[in-house]
Image 1 (cartoon, rainbow, N blue to C red):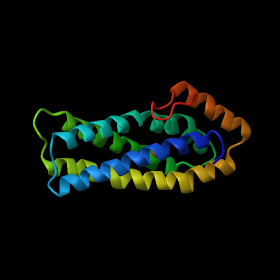
Image 2: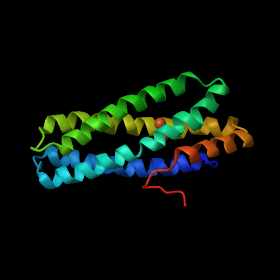
Image 3: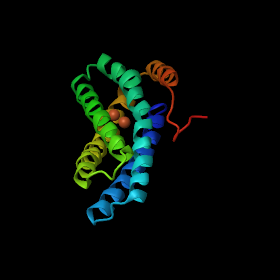
Image 4: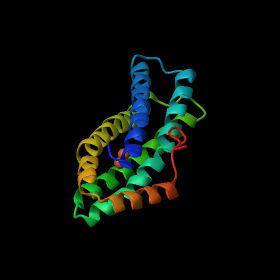
Length: 162
Ligand SMILES: [Fe+2]
Ligand SMILES: [Fe+2]
């Protein structure tokens, strides 16, 4: 993937790993393994998801405006709406992981499965459609502009740039 789109792709790799961890936690809960240790793991996972907000913000403020300039409007609108919905669910998941008593497993399952399905699909479309289009249509100057904007927003702790 062309630089600096490659940075966003690298962040996707980290997010996908976190999704795998979430899937494992959901499977454990499904088979009746809900306990404090699993909740600790869920807390760690939900912190990682919230840390990835910076990734979505970089897409929203550094990439989508450039694509929109090239007439790619609707897909960016859809992606923004999904980010918004995912932010809500990620906060919900952290709240469940942080509550004093063991949360009800169906609530974890509900928020968790949503994040799992929507975010995996979302990343897949970004990688295979949006980023590929961006790599083709953005000029060298636009890619530089994108990188400057990304620097201003900052990077995720799981994928520091330096
Ligand atoms: Fe996105
Ligand atoms: Fe993304």
